[in-house]
Length: 271
Image 1 (cartoon, one colour):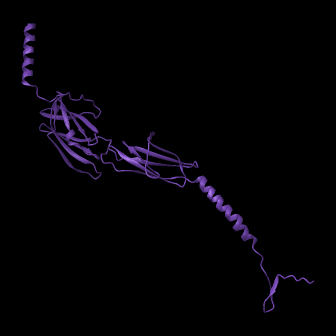
Image 2 (cartoon, helix red, strand yellow; image 1 turned 90 degrees about the horizontal axis):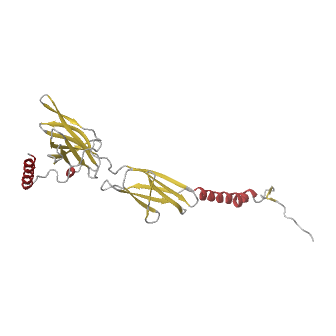
Image 3 (tube, rainbow, N blue to C red; image 1 turned 135 degrees about the vertical axis):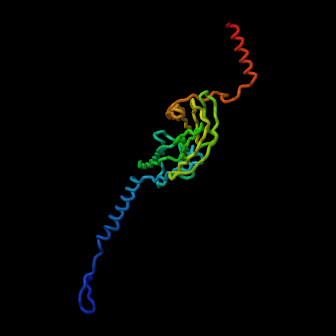
């Protein structure tokens, strides 16, 4: 029996012979070994090194006293731990929908958020909180005009509360302002006010608050130079006693009569 082996050469019509190309071993190696190796290690590298993405926003404040921070976490992996703190003090976040968290803020400072994934990778983000009003109004200028104390004060955020403005005189009696007038807004959004009081030449201590409750106070006194009363401004850190309850109120006539009678009796007994 005769056997015939197909030659690796074939001829075309012109009589030339061509050799058939064998299957490419390099293509098979890349397709079935190298490419899966690259894909697998790429996925493994991503799983090991993937970090969470954090979005941290500070909401606007309606009262300049409190605000709220909201944090959104974006990650394919479960979260292992969440940490929020303000200037080193830990805050307790409240979980919302999906991976959203909120936390109340009641002072200015640096808010730090740290999120750790289950793979051990973490992300940290910082936000500066400076929209709350923790600065009292400032005394900018003071003049004395014909017995009237004229003050210019400024506030940059919650504005001066006109109902909070008062003064105490040298007898610790309460004096209400003659006027509280808003002047205008400067280029840096600072609001100016003009306050007027009837001056006590022996000393007048003025109290003002902004609408967030921050208080400023200052003492004004006078001294004589010739025929003129010259205004003196006390130090910012000077402590002055608060007015006593009932200060500034008129004493009933009956009480005055009783006091005078007691004084006359004491005088007669002494003599």
